[in-house]
Length: 171
Image (tube, rainbow, N blue to C red; front, side, top):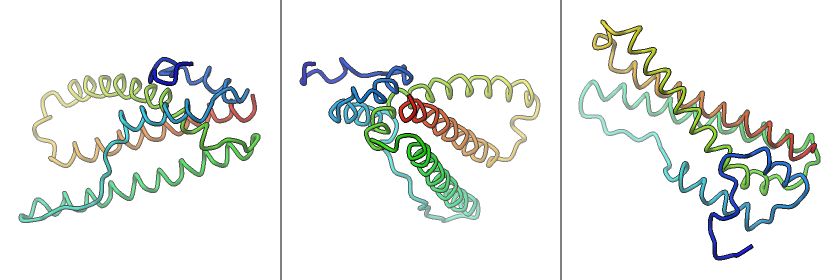
């Protein structure tokens, strides 16, 4: 393996094959780090804190939405991380961070592809269902549905990760 080549040995979509290699302990920390680095660059490059500057009455909803969004995702993150940790412990209990780092890229890309497909279906469905009344829906409908969509994608991420953690820990 040429250490200077960044993406040559990355698993972009095939998490199952990577999970098998992780189970056989054939993945180095360097390779796991590359996966985590690319994943972070693609998906986790921003942090969101619930901060809003309100000057009008309509900004009050935006403030409470940001607070709710922050806590919803923080709680889901807490639950998901514990789920993965427990799944790993129930298996062989080895190499939790190595597995998470390595699997983050292929699973993240799988979830991204799923979100594109579901987003397309959602957009088409909303277009047909609300074709006559789409402009009459409250403005916060889109914020709330966007948050719900993000939470569903996060759940899908953790369930796909859990499936691959089971492969790593149990073979």
